[in-house]
Length: 340
Image (tube, rainbow, N blue to C red; front, top):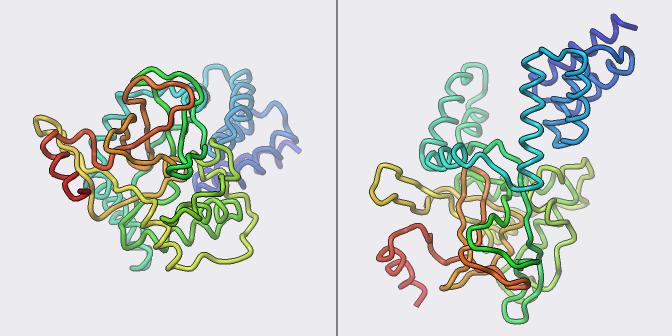
């Protein structure tokens, strides 16, 4: 039994390296059942659960590993990372220095990094696979957060996002991860592929606005947390039908956000919109727009953060700006001229 437990634990480690986290979880769990005192089995189970987003279970498994090997630096590090993510997801407590350091990379540097990774392994991949990897957008390693917000209905604007309590200016309202990000030309096919991985995702995508009142009537069936973290919706239940490419283009036209281009060397800081790259976020899309916004939005890699731009009263609707609010006043005025 102990030899089999060791073999299963070793295979779990291989699967972790291959990012087969569900397989790693199954192997580590089987190894732990055969040898409950095996610290490696507990550790690898915790790492796999963490990668799957099952943070409370990951904390428990890593705690068991730490009891059996209290001086193990890898176990300590993994447990601290899980506790950090739990704090992010439940309280919106982020390491803002690290987040904003990544914010300054949200322009060409993020793409350049992914290109560099591709070149290192391009010898053993086909040309089309390399091209696909070449267009990846980096992921921000944080846990999404949903604060005091809800999706509601406004007779004037249709669906919108509202605060559920009084909120002080500057407070973080949400951090949501994108369903897809990438070059505009690739985004429709990416959305089709993402929607077809899960019946829940297909329903969420098809419930988004199409730019007319009829598409604004139905409230989302998913929770705020599910909309903020769409990777958790991949449950293996395949949708009954497919998402046509033209329908995906229409959905993106009315719901996508341009990714930012940030020049940290300018004075003042220059923040613009990338005309070539965009993303789709399932929760922030419900925020309506106004010439008098009351929120501040920033996109850091594939995560969208939304803060209160002023004090808000319970039940007040959130409004984003039509233009990037971190741009200089003259630039915002010039951009708004196109809206009449």
